[in-house]
Image 1 (tube, rainbow, N blue to C red):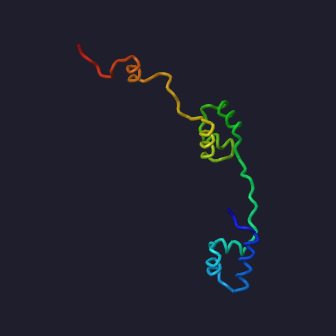
Image 2: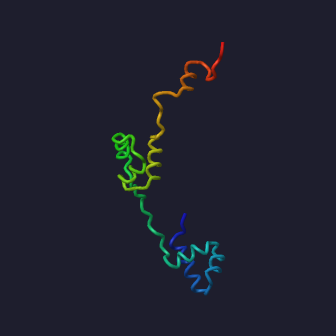
Image 3: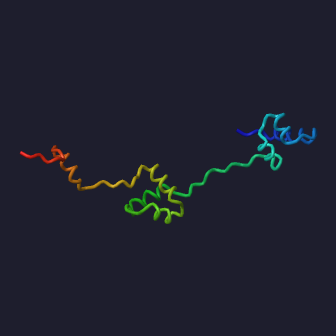
Length: 122
């Protein structure tokens, strides 16, 4: 939450009129010293701009379909972003790179068959 422009101007004018230091003014109005220093440079707050997204999620999904085995580094180079951006976007899309083995290992086959991994002698 930001302070109103009227309040900011009032604080600055009181500081000038009474000849107060930044510390004294901040203490009197119970505001931060850093805020007062910022207001002295620019009393009006900056206009906020909406965040620009560099990565189109639909294009990323199509890229995953087209190149399913591509590394995140390769995707980042294609889209002109960093690897972390690709990782976060893939996570939001619910896409992971965990590959499932189509052929289970020897121990997994034994578990599926209901036998133990240890050999038993008769």
